[in-house]
Image (tube, one colour):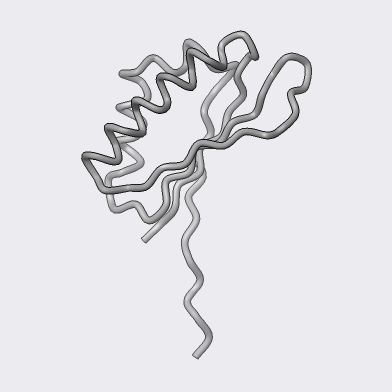
Length: 96
């Protein structure tokens, strides 16, 4: 299994509207896939921009595409300052 990390910046004046959309999106994804999403942001803003991160732990095949589709449908890019960047990480196997 893999974990997905999505990070991006948002202008401070769009933060409240974006948070509402992200929370709704994550609720739908949790109900549909059983994933337990998280939403985080850096404590400080720089030049009027906040850096946010969505975390989707232990996702299955096809989740990355599902997330991209749902994010586009929710119009998230209209509220972010630039692109959403997705990184995929996996657990290392334990030492034998």
